[in-house]
Image (cartoon, rainbow, N blue to C red; front, top):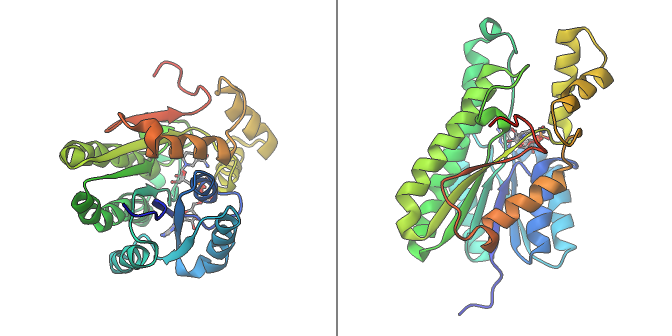
Length: 265
Ligand SMILES: NC(=O)c1ccc[n+]([C@@H]2O[C@H](COP(=O)([O-])OP(=O)(O)OC[C@H]3O[C@@H](n4cnc5c(N)ncnc54)[C@H](O)[C@@H]3O)[C@@H](O)[C@H]2O)c1
């Protein structure tokens, strides 16, 4: 038996108050070494996440790869295995939500961009780790979708809703095929999280409704039973719990972590 730590890859871990950094830190708190991944141009943010991880006494590794670059992803995963010894967990967190809330205002570019980052990027990371996980007979993948991947939410561009639904579908198919190889795959579907992305969403709602950003936030909170967005750490804790032994008998499922949005679901 090796006395090496377990290892997680977390994508989209560049932003100071993003979900990715919170997930990387939650893994580190659980004693897991973390390969933090992000676009080469966001290297500075990634280095800050790596430093936060190392402060918790585990090792980190920079996995520089745009999720639209499958070659860089393959090389980055191989580099992670060389440096940290294995990949036990993969969290596909990187995501974008671009486009218009008005269906007919979306052009092919916004559709292609959401698809490339949210879906093809998730697939490319899965493709890169699956042979390694299958060979070891263990591994756990958590893909970050959204409540917009389970149903429709007001004010969402359809390319976001559609690609977040696609993440649920591909994860279920993967879980079915790889369960016999000891690999689990699940989706976390957050509601609103207090990050830059939510701020941008509030601004879009404010503009569309002719209200202030504060009013837009109040309107959104009114649709949440707990009446507030999640802090990134509250979602991260669930992600890491499901990835690790807390989720040992969970696979192929999309779990809403939304503070009570869409209560009829
Ligand atoms: N904030 C919310 O309210 C909310 C709600 C539901 C789901 N989510 C999902 O949670 C995840 C994290 O969101 P967040 O709120 O932290 O968003 P964010 O915009 O703060 O961070 C997104 C991260 O993805 C990275 N990223 C974007 N495009 C990339 C690319 N091409 N290659 C590599 N990395 C790329 C960014 O650099 C950043 O690190 C996303 O998948 C998002 O869709 C967010």
